[in-house]
Image 1 (cartoon, rainbow, N blue to C red):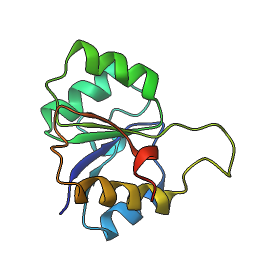
Image 2 (image 1 turned 90 degrees about the horizontal axis):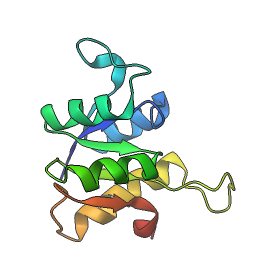
Image 3 (image 1 turned 120 degrees about the vertical axis):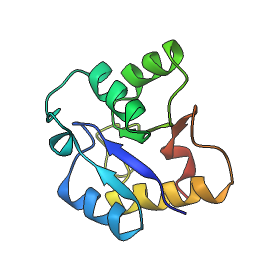
Image 4 (image 1 turned 90 degrees about the vertical axis):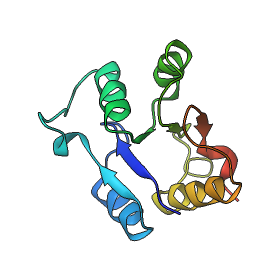
Length: 121
């Protein structure tokens, strides 16, 4: 299964994008948007992902939880919590695997707020 994903500014990396594409996902980043959304506010990224029918991938769970609570009608929010501790933080490969693990459960991604840390098996 593949997802249409949007990586916000804090989640963007060339390596993560490449790994997600290799895993079969359709990935958009802020620089791909028209007009480009690099350095835009979270609410702008959220609105764009919603309009583009993409799940958003972010390292900013607190702000996106507030957006989700305010407007749960979106295509999914996938978050990663980070402690700045390499023994607990997820690598890009682990993020891709966590998305596959989440998908394998058969849940509906849309309208959900998903912590990928919980799917790190």
